[in-house]
Image (cartoon, rainbow, N blue to C red; front, top):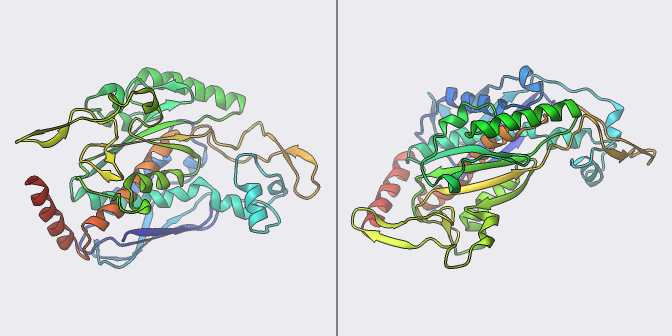
Length: 375
C-alpha cells in the first residue's frame, strides 16, 4: 500500500517526508517535483515568505539512477525562513490549533504547536504528491484544479456550469488560478482591500481527476470507499472546512429523477453517461467518469488586526499575536489539493492493481482493461 509521513516545523531547519509503496522501476524527474513546489508558492495574496523561500527537494533514498527501487523514498526540503522565540506565543490566536494544542500536549506556550500545525508542512505533501502524479501519469490519469471562488466572488467557469472541456492551462496562467478573468480582477481588488484593512479571505477550489478506470475503491468496507479516502485527505489540509464530491451540497436542490446519471450503452463506447452529477464515484467506487472534487477553505485565522484572546499565564483579556501571514492562500490550496488527490488515487489504484514493480502493475492494469472492454 502507499502511505507517507512528514516531519519538521514551519521555522525549523528542514521538512522531511517518507513515501512508501511506490513500485520499482518508475523514473522520477526531480525537476518536475521542484516545478510542483514552485506552483504551490505562487498566488496573489501570499505573504512575503514566498519571496524568501525557493523550495527545492532533495531525494536521499529510494532511487537508483533516478529510478525507484521499491524501497521507501525519503525527501528533504530546506527551510530558509527562520522564526524567533518571544512572549507572543502566550497569546493564542482564535481559529488556530494554538490553545487546544498547548493544553493537549502540556506545553508552556503555543510555539511548538503552531510550528507543526502550520500549512508550511504542505510543501512536503506537494513533493510527495508530485511523485504520485508521475506514477499515475503512466496509466493516463491526470489531475487538474482551478479556483472557483474567492470569498463571495464566484467564477463563471466550473465543471457543472461549463459542461464542456475546461482549458486548465488558463488557470496556470492566472496568479489566482481563476479561469474567469473578470472574476479574477474583482477578486484581486478584494484581496488588496483585505491587505489594506488587515483581514483575510477564503475561497473554493475545484479538482478534476481524469481517466480513472472503473472499479477503483470499494463498497465492501467503510474505509475502502474512494470518496471517503478523498474526503479525508482533503479535510487534512490546513484551513479546509468542507469537501464535496460531484454536485455536492447543491444536489439537495434536485429531485431524485434529475439528480442521478442515466446509463447508456453503445458498441463503440460501452457503458457511458451523458451527465456526471455523481462526480465520478458511485457507492464508493469510481465509475469511469471524471472525478470532481470541491473544497472550501476558511479565511486564514491570523489577522493583522488581531482578534481578542486570553493570556494563558495571567488569564487576562488581550489581543492575539500576529506574524507573517497570507491574506489569501486559495491558489496555493489548489496545488496542495492536487497533490493530496494524487496520493489518494494512487493508494486506491495500488489496492486494485498491486505489484512490486511497474511492469507487474502495468500487466495487472492491462489485464483488467481487457476484461472491462468485454463487459
